[in-house]
Image 1: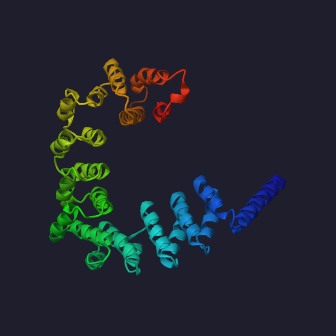
Image 2: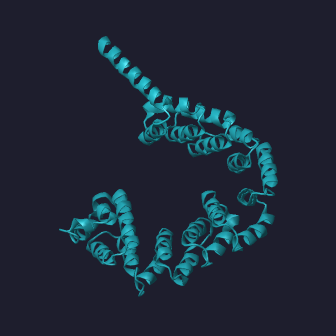
Image 3: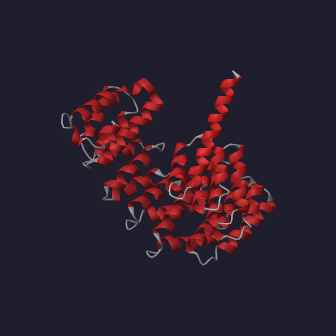
Length: 361
């Protein structure tokens, strides 16, 4: 009854008093905040709201991330306050990103943020404003801000601003961006972020940039995979383009993720079949992609055959397919069971040889 409620209230107060003492202890506070953040617990929301106002910018940054994960009205209010008032621009930028992630930054918030005196925040806000609002005033503000930032001395800011303008229909930005991604001296981070922006914002005008990166072997594998996703998102018929990149590459680390992207697209079956019939080492994976379309004994045999490749990247691919099929097909995905049990049993009784892939299986 009331006694139990009072006892519970006292326990809560004691817990918060203890947390308060830990947080002011310089030796333990950083570890404590990281632990609270990992807990992802709504009960800790008041703690993170309080931390978002503390004097230590590292703790405010951690609090910002936690507030973005927890969400809810109080978390959103705290993030908006951080965006508007925090003394550290990195915290304000983080608050804006988290507000965008939880869809809590409306056009008015973005319009105000685009006038904060920090190029990074201005660029994020203006690009988002252009995507979210149809109001001519907002679009004019976004275009003016991005045009100014396109001349920034910071190459990343300038690139992102030019991409924002391209997305708004300014085709005159394309030659400069093409030159940028084609230049071997351009920082790989910039090219990767351009590819991500094309995909995330579905910038159809960015197709030539994605195709250039995808078809250029000198780019790092991960950058080309991002370009592959950008092509898959924006090119009207991406299947032949992606297949050509797979055929011309010598890297299995590129070919396998690219085949995964290819397999997701309509009309890819004949291209996947061509890989399955080839002498390529990962051809059995393509065979599995085809066999899993109609679950049954042939699917189980395809899993068994693909597992015999015994390459971590191949095994991880199979595990991802298994998870996808279990989520989609439920009991019909049982064709994975026997091959995976055999795969696990192959390392017994010497369990020291078990790798991450066996635990996944």
